[in-house]
Image (tube, rainbow, N blue to C red; front, side, top):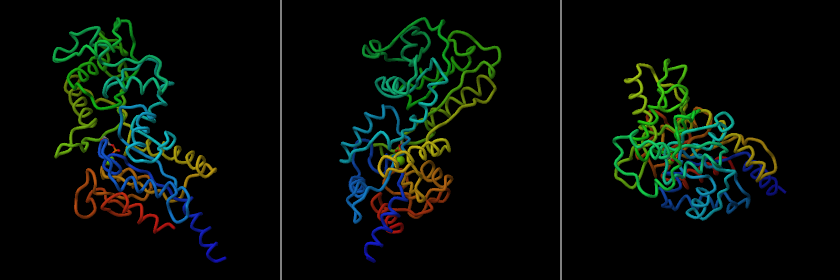
Amino acid sequence: AQLQDLAAQKTGAAKDMAFAFDIDGVLVHGDRLIPEGKRVLEILNGDNELGIKIPHIFLTNGSGKIETKRCAQLSKILGSEISTQQFIQSHTPMSALAEYYQTVLVVGGENYQCREVAQTYGFKDIIVPNDIFAAQPTISPLKEFFTDEQRRTSNPRDFSKVKIDAILVFSDSRDYATDLQIIMDLLQSENGVLGTRAKDPVSQRIPIYFSQGDLLCPSEHPYPRMSQGTFRIALEAIYKQITGVELERVVYGKPELATYKYADEVLASWMDTIHGEEKLPKNIYMIGDNPQSDIIGGNMYGWNTCLVRTGVYQGEGNDDENPANFGVFKNVLEAVQTALKKEL
Ligand code: G3P
Ligand code: MG
């Protein structure tokens, strides 16, 4: 009977804890598996002493693909099914903007995949920079390449008759010169009509949103590469120099508060899916590799934070500026095992 009590107690504790995983640098490097990541998902999906599922969600600043495609890709790499219901990319919470803006300029990403992201989110009229370039090539004198494929998948039209309601930077720019130029044109236009100039740079300016703020991103290159944050900083500096006013903008993604609030909603509904009760677990563990996004955000939000050494962070002890409150671990498996030991 005592053993049964203990098992019931542990099961209760297992239902009152959850993990939020960063993806790049924790579970995978791009498309390459971090082997401990695969084992961790097996454990949390039921291969543990209690034989039950331990709730976990994925909270990534990654972007550029629709959720179903990215989940399918990750499920294959990690060898465990990842549901879109437990998955948040940097731009996922931006789907809420679809009800406010009719016509949007969507910037960033590969092969027009961000157009597909915006369609999935319910945006009605989606424009990408190549649509504008196809209609008016003189808009970007510094652009050197416009491939046949890009031309074929562009929708040129008379943009002097189009009012763009907002600019959404979903993913990394593939052409800084053209994207910065077109965004600058729009930010200085009268209420988002290309070819016009606002009389008042602030009241007639359309809003701009960024899906995340990371300055650097780990890659196959020996040193991390520039990410969406550097693009934003470049734009802010150019905008300030040219107009004399600060650019107001909204940034999503970790470590922004809105993203953690959104993660709570996703986690609560995922609890309902796997345990039949929509309630937030008491003990949430964020596992990340970037002190400046995963750890600072988790700390501010009252989560337990674990920093791993398989990605951006390579230091010896804890990070000086944003120390992980639950500790620093060699890899994700070590972090999860330590958390499970403490809670169960
Ligand atoms: O910095 C961009 C992105 O690749 C980071 O993804 O999963 O580490 O939040 P993640
Ligand atoms: Mg990461």
